[in-house]
Length: 249
Image: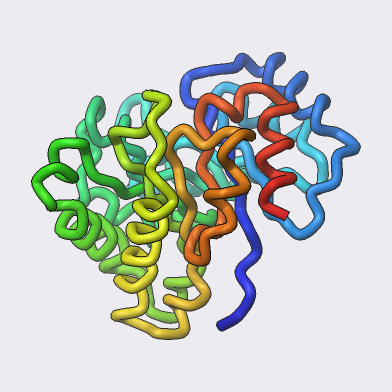
C-alpha cells in the first residue's frame, strides 16, 4: 500500500469576511506543515482574499459548486469560475448542503467529475444520521452515497477524490465517533472504492469529520484508515487548526 499524505481541511461554513480570512491566513504564516496537506474551505466572497493571503503550504477550497459549466442558475458558481481564480478544490455533498439546500446524490454524481475536469480536488462528504445508525443502516447509507458520488468518475481518477466521512450526529454537536466507529466507517468507504479498483482503494484519502479538535485529533488521526480531517468549529481559530495539522504529522 502506498503511503497516503494526511490531509487537514478547515470548513469555515458561513463564517469570516474577506478581511477575517486574510487575518486568519496571516496568522498561519511561517508555520510549517511539512508532510501534511492543509486547506481552508471558505465562503465565495472570501475566496479571492484567501487565495491572495494563503502561503505556499495552504490550499484554498470552495464549499460548493454547480454541476453545469454555465446557464440560467441564479446565485450559483461553476467549477470553471472557481478554477479561473486559482481555487484548488471544493467540498461537495456536505450534510448541511444536503439537508438545507436539497443537494442530492444524483446532483453529486455530476458535480464530482465536473470538479475533476476543471482541475479541482473534490471532497465528497458522506455520513449517516443518528436515526440511521440506530437502525443499523450506516453501511447502506454510505454505500449509496459513495457509489452514487463516484459513479461517473473514471476508474483511473478515483484516487483523486477525497472522501470525508462525517457522521451527521457528530457535526457541531460536540459528540465524536469512537475510534472504533470512525475506523470502521472510514475503512468501509475505502473498501467501496476498492470494489472498483484495488489500487484506488489503497490510494484514496478518507477524512474523518465530526467535532475533531486538538484534544482528540491525535487519537483519530492515528487510525489506519483515517487520512486526515474535515474540521468545522475548530478550524475557525488559527492556533486550534494548526494544532490539528501538527497532530496529523
